[in-house]
Image 1 (cartoon, one colour):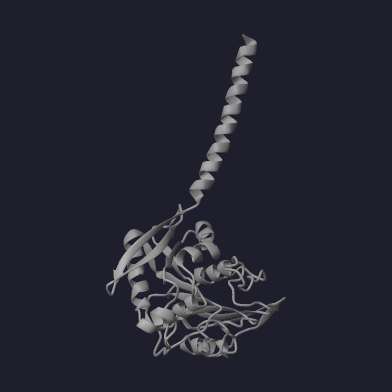
Image 2 (cartoon, rainbow, N blue to C red; image 1 turned 180 degrees about the horizontal axis):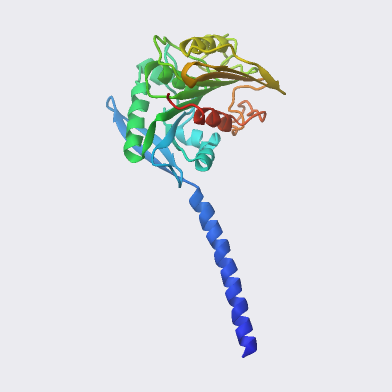
Length: 297
């Protein structure tokens, strides 16, 4: 009888251990959010976006809009740049609008949306409103990020709306007119070996042959809009950071990476023969840290 009781106790201990391990797995799975796909109609066009919602969100959650680059997609942006994992850790929502393939950002760029003057600003604006009906969104903490043509869309949204607290632009420039933009915080990350959207504003080698203004000129313009002080300069290996403190708690920061090409630092390779992502920094983590520090005043 004693042996039977001992065997039962051992079995119960094994089952308890297995249950605890299984509960840990379930808890880890629950910590990951889920992504849903939604469609809205804008100017008679059916548009779609992906929405990633972490398992845990505050009642009024920050929202990041992440715009893919040219020839990309919402699914590709979600897969390539690590925003879902960052959102799960930091408890914010991410919306990935679908171009598809390109965005109309001014100066005829880019692709069919540019030629047909598709109103992508209206699409993103309507998308944010749709997200707001699904989640509790903090209107003081709405942000836009993007790479290449998607970064140009982030600048276009900054120029043409009053929605965003800050934008994060990677491997890009600003195209088209930007009369009277609302002040907002800006972080821009650029590889100095980028030949597709060149830092110096010379014509690029990509399909769109981007020849927008030099990035330093774009950043200087936003420092003027935001009434910023002189930037400080720090260098760590290939990374040089130039933050400027601005009026009402805003900031404009330029980060350059020696030897980095047209890519999202810390991300994945998007397609064959694309520039390899720099490992000098994690652009997603850096941009989110900047966003988290800059709500609308």
